[in-house]
Image 1 (cartoon, helix red, strand yellow):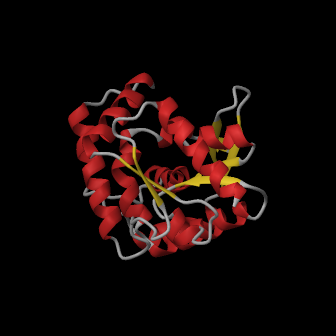
Image 2 (cartoon, rainbow, N blue to C red):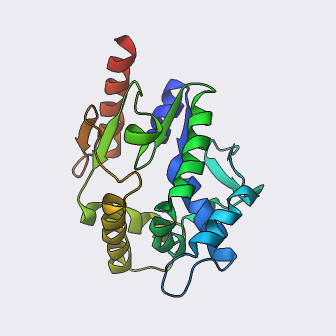
Length: 211
Protein backbone atom coordinates (compact mmCIF):
# COMPACT_ATOMS: atom_id res chain seq x y z
CA UNK A 1 0.00 0.00 0.00
CA UNK A 2 2.74 2.46 0.98
CA UNK A 3 4.94 1.33 -1.91
CA UNK A 4 2.11 1.84 -4.42
CA UNK A 5 1.40 5.37 -3.15
CA UNK A 6 5.07 6.32 -3.38
CA UNK A 7 5.25 5.08 -6.96
CA UNK A 8 2.04 6.90 -7.89
CA UNK A 9 3.06 10.29 -6.49
CA UNK A 10 6.77 10.10 -7.30
CA UNK A 11 8.05 9.87 -3.72
CA UNK A 12 10.70 7.51 -2.38
CA UNK A 13 9.42 4.48 -0.48
CA UNK A 14 11.18 3.35 2.70
CA UNK A 15 10.27 0.06 4.38
CA UNK A 16 11.44 0.65 7.95
CA UNK A 17 10.51 -2.89 8.93
CA UNK A 18 13.01 -4.22 6.41
CA UNK A 19 15.74 -2.37 8.29
CA UNK A 20 14.91 -4.14 11.55
CA UNK A 21 14.70 -7.42 9.66
CA UNK A 22 18.16 -6.81 8.21
CA UNK A 23 19.65 -6.29 11.67
CA UNK A 24 17.86 -9.45 12.80
CA UNK A 25 19.28 -11.44 9.89
CA UNK A 26 22.76 -10.20 10.77
CA UNK A 27 22.23 -11.27 14.38
CA UNK A 28 20.98 -14.70 13.34
CA UNK A 29 23.86 -15.28 10.94
CA UNK A 30 26.36 -14.31 13.65
CA UNK A 31 24.72 -16.47 16.36
CA UNK A 32 23.67 -13.49 18.46
CA UNK A 33 20.25 -15.07 19.08
CA UNK A 34 19.97 -18.08 21.34
CA UNK A 35 17.88 -21.21 20.99
CA UNK A 36 15.34 -19.57 23.30
CA UNK A 37 14.85 -16.79 20.74
CA UNK A 38 16.39 -14.14 22.97
CA UNK A 39 19.19 -11.97 21.60
CA UNK A 40 22.60 -11.33 23.15
CA UNK A 41 21.89 -7.63 23.54
CA UNK A 42 25.51 -6.63 24.12
CA UNK A 43 26.68 -8.49 21.03
CA UNK A 44 23.94 -6.95 18.88
CA UNK A 45 24.69 -3.42 20.11
CA UNK A 46 28.43 -3.83 19.60
CA UNK A 47 27.82 -5.04 16.04
CA UNK A 48 25.65 -2.09 14.99
CA UNK A 49 28.57 -0.08 13.50
CA UNK A 50 29.23 -3.06 11.21
CA UNK A 51 25.67 -3.18 9.90
CA UNK A 52 25.13 -1.10 6.77
CA UNK A 53 21.62 -1.00 5.32
CA UNK A 54 20.58 0.45 1.99
CA UNK A 55 17.86 0.01 -0.61
CA UNK A 56 18.18 -0.64 -4.34
CA UNK A 57 15.45 -0.29 -6.95
CA UNK A 58 15.36 -3.26 -9.32
CA UNK A 59 14.71 -3.08 -13.09
CA UNK A 60 11.12 -4.24 -12.48
CA UNK A 61 10.56 -1.32 -10.09
CA UNK A 62 10.63 -3.34 -6.86
CA UNK A 63 12.82 -2.24 -3.98
CA UNK A 64 15.28 -4.65 -2.41
CA UNK A 65 17.05 -4.38 0.91
CA UNK A 66 20.85 -4.52 0.96
CA UNK A 67 22.78 -5.63 4.03
CA UNK A 68 26.44 -4.68 3.78
CA UNK A 69 26.05 -4.53 0.02
CA UNK A 70 24.33 -7.93 -0.32
CA UNK A 71 20.74 -8.28 -1.52
CA UNK A 72 18.89 -9.95 1.39
CA UNK A 73 15.32 -9.17 0.35
CA UNK A 74 14.30 -12.82 0.16
CA UNK A 75 16.06 -13.88 3.36
CA UNK A 76 14.62 -11.12 5.57
CA UNK A 77 11.06 -12.16 4.65
CA UNK A 78 11.47 -15.73 5.85
CA UNK A 79 9.70 -16.91 8.99
CA UNK A 80 12.95 -17.44 10.91
CA UNK A 81 13.55 -13.70 10.70
CA UNK A 82 9.91 -12.88 11.46
CA UNK A 83 10.12 -15.00 14.59
CA UNK A 84 13.20 -13.16 15.85
CA UNK A 85 12.67 -9.56 14.76
CA UNK A 86 10.50 -8.19 17.59
CA UNK A 87 13.05 -8.87 20.40
CA UNK A 88 15.75 -7.26 18.25
CA UNK A 89 13.52 -4.28 17.48
CA UNK A 90 12.85 -3.81 21.20
CA UNK A 91 16.53 -3.12 21.94
CA UNK A 92 16.75 0.67 22.57
CA UNK A 93 20.15 1.08 20.88
CA UNK A 94 18.88 -0.66 17.75
CA UNK A 95 15.83 1.60 17.60
CA UNK A 96 17.91 4.74 18.16
CA UNK A 97 20.35 3.79 15.38
CA UNK A 98 17.67 2.94 12.84
CA UNK A 99 15.42 5.89 13.71
CA UNK A 100 18.37 8.23 13.06
CA UNK A 101 18.95 6.49 9.73
CA UNK A 102 15.27 6.76 8.80
CA UNK A 103 15.12 10.44 9.72
CA UNK A 104 18.19 11.11 7.59
CA UNK A 105 16.51 9.43 4.63
CA UNK A 106 13.50 11.67 5.16
CA UNK A 107 15.54 14.85 4.69
CA UNK A 108 16.53 13.94 1.15
CA UNK A 109 13.16 14.21 -0.61
CA UNK A 110 9.47 13.42 -0.27
CA UNK A 111 9.05 9.93 1.16
CA UNK A 112 6.40 7.43 2.09
CA UNK A 113 7.56 5.30 5.02
CA UNK A 114 5.79 2.44 6.73
CA UNK A 115 6.54 0.89 10.09
CA UNK A 116 5.28 0.50 13.63
CA UNK A 117 6.53 3.78 15.10
CA UNK A 118 6.75 6.13 12.11
CA UNK A 119 3.96 8.52 13.09
CA UNK A 120 4.79 8.54 16.80
CA UNK A 121 8.61 8.57 16.91
CA UNK A 122 10.34 8.79 13.54
CA UNK A 123 8.25 11.55 11.95
CA UNK A 124 5.89 12.96 14.59
CA UNK A 125 5.40 16.05 12.39
CA UNK A 126 4.62 14.18 9.18
CA UNK A 127 2.09 15.85 6.88
CA UNK A 128 0.01 12.67 6.75
CA UNK A 129 -0.17 9.74 9.14
CA UNK A 130 -2.22 6.63 8.49
CA UNK A 131 -2.71 3.94 11.13
CA UNK A 132 -3.59 0.79 9.20
CA UNK A 133 -5.09 -2.17 11.01
CA UNK A 134 -6.83 -5.46 10.36
CA UNK A 135 -7.61 -8.50 12.45
CA UNK A 136 -4.70 -10.79 13.30
CA UNK A 137 -6.39 -13.56 11.32
CA UNK A 138 -6.71 -11.37 8.23
CA UNK A 139 -3.09 -10.22 8.41
CA UNK A 140 -1.89 -13.77 8.98
CA UNK A 141 -3.84 -15.04 5.96
CA UNK A 142 -2.33 -12.32 3.76
CA UNK A 143 1.17 -13.03 5.06
CA UNK A 144 0.67 -16.79 4.65
CA UNK A 145 -0.35 -16.33 1.02
CA UNK A 146 2.66 -14.07 0.40
CA UNK A 147 5.07 -16.59 1.90
CA UNK A 148 3.60 -19.46 -0.11
CA UNK A 149 3.98 -17.45 -3.31
CA UNK A 150 7.66 -16.99 -2.42
CA UNK A 151 8.13 -20.70 -1.92
CA UNK A 152 8.31 -20.80 1.88
CA UNK A 153 7.10 -24.02 3.51
CA UNK A 154 5.03 -22.67 6.40
CA UNK A 155 1.61 -23.30 7.90
CA UNK A 156 -1.11 -20.75 8.50
CA UNK A 157 -1.03 -21.60 12.21
CA UNK A 158 2.69 -20.75 12.38
CA UNK A 159 2.13 -17.42 10.68
CA UNK A 160 -0.84 -16.51 12.88
CA UNK A 161 1.13 -17.36 16.03
CA UNK A 162 3.95 -15.10 14.78
CA UNK A 163 1.57 -12.21 14.09
CA UNK A 164 -0.03 -12.44 17.54
CA UNK A 165 3.35 -12.78 19.26
CA UNK A 166 4.83 -9.79 17.43
CA UNK A 167 1.77 -7.65 18.19
CA UNK A 168 2.14 -8.41 21.88
CA UNK A 169 5.85 -7.59 22.00
CA UNK A 170 5.53 -4.45 19.88
CA UNK A 171 2.60 -2.98 21.81
CA UNK A 172 4.07 -3.68 25.25
CA UNK A 173 7.76 -2.82 24.77
CA UNK A 174 9.08 0.18 26.68
CA UNK A 175 10.94 1.69 23.73
CA UNK A 176 8.68 3.21 21.02
CA UNK A 177 5.68 0.89 21.49
CA UNK A 178 3.25 0.37 18.64
CA UNK A 179 0.34 2.74 19.07
CA UNK A 180 -1.82 5.05 16.99
CA UNK A 181 -0.66 8.68 16.95
CA UNK A 182 -3.31 11.11 18.17
CA UNK A 183 -3.43 12.84 14.78
CA UNK A 184 -3.30 9.68 12.65
CA UNK A 185 -6.17 8.72 10.36
CA UNK A 186 -7.34 5.18 11.11
CA UNK A 187 -7.95 2.64 8.38
CA UNK A 188 -9.24 -0.89 8.97
CA UNK A 189 -8.66 -2.59 5.64
CA UNK A 190 -9.88 -6.05 6.69
CA UNK A 191 -12.61 -6.13 4.04
CA UNK A 192 -11.05 -3.84 1.42
CA UNK A 193 -9.58 -4.88 -1.89
CA UNK A 194 -6.10 -3.69 -2.85
CA UNK A 195 -7.64 -1.29 -5.35
CA UNK A 196 -10.03 0.14 -2.76
CA UNK A 197 -7.32 0.80 -0.19
CA UNK A 198 -5.00 2.33 -2.79
CA UNK A 199 -7.72 4.72 -3.93
CA UNK A 200 -8.57 5.60 -0.32
CA UNK A 201 -4.93 6.35 0.50
CA UNK A 202 -4.38 8.44 -2.63
CA UNK A 203 -7.44 10.52 -1.72
CA UNK A 204 -6.01 11.14 1.77
CA UNK A 205 -2.67 12.13 0.21
CA UNK A 206 -4.34 14.60 -2.16
CA UNK A 207 -6.25 16.13 0.75
CA UNK A 208 -3.02 16.52 2.75
CA UNK A 209 -1.01 18.19 -0.02
CA UNK A 210 -3.85 20.57 -0.86
CA UNK A 211 -4.00 21.96 2.67
